[in-house]
Image (tube, rainbow, N blue to C red; front, side):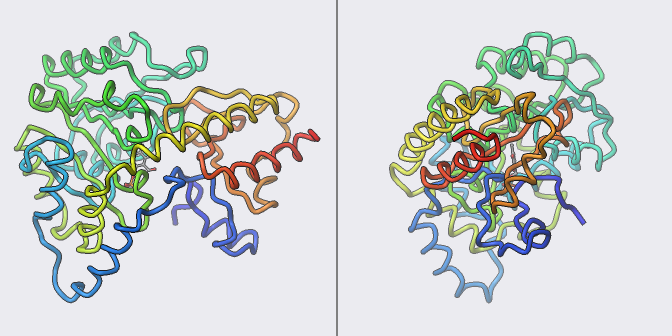
Length: 361
Ligand SMILES: Cc1ncc(COP(=O)(O)O)c(C=O)c1O
């Protein structure tokens, strides 16, 4: 049974503490604090009556909406059962011999690669550069590597990769026949999305695959909806063939289509998250933990020496608050934690609990 691998496991936390799962304040998963848009909820509820028939195997309406929103051809889109499913399908279709991932990063790239028999190499992001990618990544992009996974902004560090670097990586990789998967699942939370997204480069580079999710930005992790995009139609076709059909439920298809008709929701989210992220940074810095700048709806921090003998996750859980210990991220250790940016009221409760644990009035 998978426990404690990712955040969001309120079920295990509830089982262990006896606190009801609805009463746990979950800072361990990074979901839009504004919640599910009403139109999305309504579309999902309305679609339930159609559950007596199979979903559209080609997700036609959803693809049409994604195509319009992303300005890419419908033929370049593969809708998936959450972005995680796309990651596994990519690994199982391409079956690379050697893959490169950064560390720390979202662990499912490595898990998917290993499950498909790939040897995995790591590019370690360095704490001294606030975990920002440096040009020495190019020392790792060698002949023999077949695929690279990049996360932009990176989970759990929140750092963006400079557009010039991403572009150069994709370019160099194309010359070497390497596929580049860029996970932009959290990019919608950034004020700088347009400057960093590589979607405009899909037409130029057929070795590029971009991953997106409805999960975080539309707050629907329970529905399981993501997609990936590539101008390499052989890849899109292969992703369709290397897993079961009907991978996206009719409820998720309806919810996704409604989400993309929302006007102003992402802008409102970016503004809210940005203000709350600043609030959390200010408060965390006042408590004396080391924070790392973030362009997403989460913050990585490292506890001060004075707090090192405290298991912060356990201490907060006693108070009904769940945060993400980063001890199982390659390249991090027990002193690192990640918290989501939630609503002001929720963020305030977390800060009050942290101040109490740190013995600050
Ligand atoms: C960077 C990143 N990509 C993809 C995923 C998977 O998203 P989904 O829930 O849509 O499968 C996650 C989940 O936490 C993530 O952090």
